Image (cartoon, rainbow, N blue to C red; front, side, top):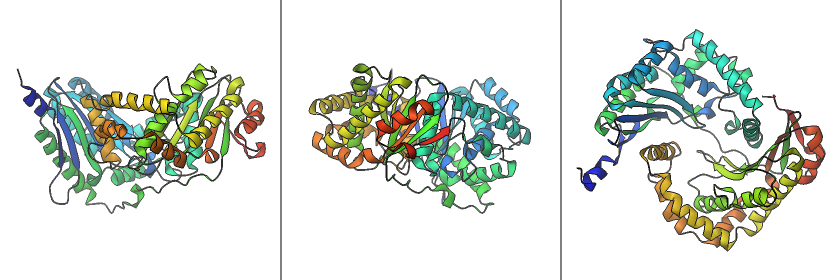
Length: 457
């Protein structure tokens, strides 16, 4: 039986910079021999914000194509080899990172690493797979436009960010992806899949030394590829989005809705902002996961307007969004919006009560351990910390940082941050029935309310 000390040593997170001269790739691997499985995430610290004008969805498209053929294997052969290993490999696109996520039995680690290296360094981007993928993603986008919740999120991001890259849909627009060709997909690959942006994060039944060695070899292969290219890093950065100067409202017109989707919010903050933990607590009191949150009590419990009501931040390398979401019946939508705006205005003016503060503070401290209580969660934390330039161990610091907060400083942070008069509001519903009552509910002149069809990209 292993001692507690030896067990702890197995679970230590090993972090490396791939230390050859000129290399900046990183690896963070946590050995966990409790199961004979290795989980590997190969990330590149760049994402959908690099898509560019009229090329929305290009980053996601390029990433999906990595799994559709290499110089040696076809898509079918890649899938067959993964099946024979009993392994998984998927691709995820975020605004500022792209991630190949995989898992494999430790006994199959070596052939899996070989395949993974091949997928990353030797993609072939076959024309026939480009054509197939265009059709597949177009179908997913059409399905998204038909789902009111997804449609509402997509419309709100676009409306809030007003042309900023954060507002572009990850999957893109059908009109854009139809124009993608192999040359620009290859060019985007060369721009994004580069050694300086490489981050490998994982956990499982493998030695950190072996994973470090593999990451160095992968980084070296990528460095050899990029040395032949004349690449610019300017396209990889994104400027801060501009805050709104007035309250705005968009109706996404969808006929015959009996239920609507309301999203309202504003530009958010960075996780490195000095007020992050204060606003994290304040937002949790307003619309966090607790059934006792202000929005749930006022909108669902007391008035029965919406089965759910919540609020949340989204974070990036620049301030992203703070969002309130609810989905009332169409007949209740004007009242629900008007009252939600009153709640937000009261939050800005008066903050949260002593009872709400103490309850939320205690709840967040008691649940903070669930942020990092499993290897998979610690891997996600490391991905987040590395991709958003957060201090190492930031996610583990929540309990201590929240414990030190006072109600007065939380309320002051809310007062300074929340801007009720500058909110962007989107409603998915039937415009002819809602336009006039929503104008009254939001305090916006009816002729300033924007309307667009739900199937407009």
